[in-house]
Length: 448
Image 1: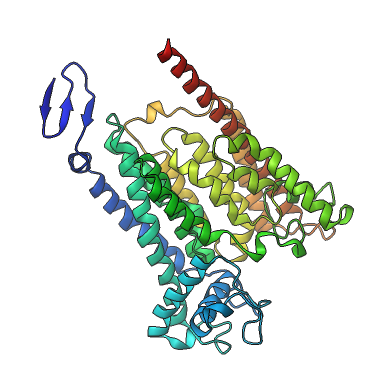
Image 2 (image 1 turned 120 degrees about the vertical axis):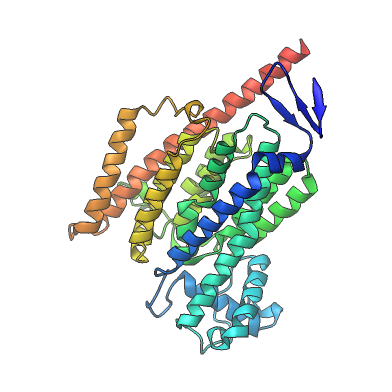
């Protein structure tokens, strides 16, 4: 064995163990790959932002775009102690600020930036429903800059830490993984199309995961604490006045409402207990392995369709180990948001990003032959499901539902997506427990 500049080269093997992270960074070319992919990913985000957004030209409350803009109004023009209080100057019924303080301060910082160039866009009362070209441009810029300053560095941190401990990783695998994460169609469509700031909370979470991998527990605690204080709602954490579901979501309550009229048969109190019991029961096996996002998405009270981004994140982090899991959850997460995105006028970017994701997923890679798909999903079953999805897309865009069942197509879409989410939920739980058993057996062997 010979040592060269902080690295060890095994003469009888091709494995290279890298002791110097700086050498690994340059040798593997991760910096260059990340830079090129990041530039393309930013261009894709800009292209999507040229399309409509949630509530565009739709008074009186417009949509999520107006909610985010109005929070800038509140934080800029009111004292901190009044941000969350209902008053004559802060009508909580009109997009009241109900997210934790980190979101409020983020709105304040973004509001300062917008007021610097276009004060009319963040003027309390008179700016309601503001949709000037410059105002929309500045609002889009706040999302793009948040993505570039939080999510992108977090992905770089994760990839650097994750692959620096894997000397057998190839450059093509690393580039593929970077592209999969930075060009996630669901995140891009929701943040840069529909209009939100999920890139901040998800970026903080990715950073926390990377910190755990690099044995920096305090950094991980800090970043994950920030993530929880950015996107966990306050008043709407339990929005019981809205009922157990509101929009088209591929979770248990909406999907089964086709057959069981939950809102008619049960009181809100009973539904609260049912939701709590179902969520906790299905969450327990996952919580032992620290992954419960799927359970919360499928059984919690008042789940938003955008909540699928949470279970989608760990699938993206494990893309190289579980490529089929990533593909299947991404495609059905996209499909489950299709009614929302169609309502926002985002059909073109939806189709374009779906195609882009498919092309990236099937791109040649050094270890493509090693990334085997899940045996339980044979090609015949997946082909049938994909064909059903394509047919439902066409039907939803070209046909009118029966008058008696105006939401029939949405219900069928959610039923299909929910069925696949359930299968993936069972699979991920089983996989976790199999890994735990494998680790336990390895420890026993070492002790013997």
